[in-house]
Image (cartoon, rainbow, N blue to C red):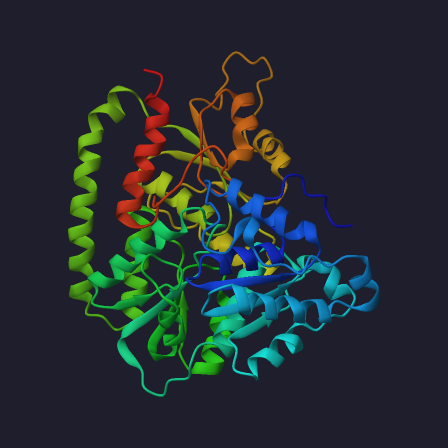
Length: 446
């Protein structure tokens, strides 16, 4: 029997598809679903992603068929045809993308065929089946990318050896996606490469349309966007590599060396970039050392996040900040093979620390795992309590932090107690911001 999930940390596949499309420039998502779907998705995306907001033609203004009983009984393809036609007439966009909900897929509406009728008439309309029952936000992201890579990206016979594509940082689901993409783009620019991120600052649909001219695709994840990378390689002949999300010096060194090796960048060039970035990075940590020691800012810690953030944050805490992560809870729905890959990311830390890693989507389970991990006080004379401690997770971890009497910082979806604009936690620069945020929580009451 499938485990009941309390307070899920993601949306359904339809929600992930809408979140992905809404941040692509001048792309108009068209929902083919019941009326409640669009409103619920808008509220979940905007209120739980650092107050993301609607943007252009999104949120409550999103075009939707809002199917009801008649459409469910007799089919909703006619209603979808009407909605696409009216959206093309009144909404200014460069690409229109139909995504479907559970109900219309259950009755067999063929959204792809309806969209193709418009596409064959010269209208820029695509569609994908994204029924919520198929999976969560991450699957919706993958489905959208696979469709775009097959049917929107133009085929290119010539490849530009100095251009790469980068994805795997899931928009909106990673609340800091835009800042993180900017940081990673800058790092690869230091190696001499132009980078298409599709969802980053200053990107246009032309970056996506011409992406097949890249020499390599870089997937910054062990779980997200990999199926899309396989489609890209199959259709456009561009190979891909996977590399974990880098946070801090240790993670970013791994990122730069892995990418540099794949691109056959001179080892000297890579090491020079690393040395320069580390010099700047640790100069700020040096400033912090007096306060860190005098105020005893070292902490035990718990990390709760997806398969991108879980390993990245843990490595940063253990190897860069000198903390003691004891428990990591990975909140994704992963296959056994994916779990094995992610679990392997927690081995080989420079600090030698090896935290307990569990995979569970249920927010209420974290406290139980901590009790199992850390010895309980049984009125013995000497007891090593889980204190001082700190929790890195989502807004759901507030109650756990209060019950333990420890501070926490929300850094993974959902985040409803912070406003996020261009903040980043990736790379060297992002880790400095993360350090500021974590330690500011600790000293805020002084």
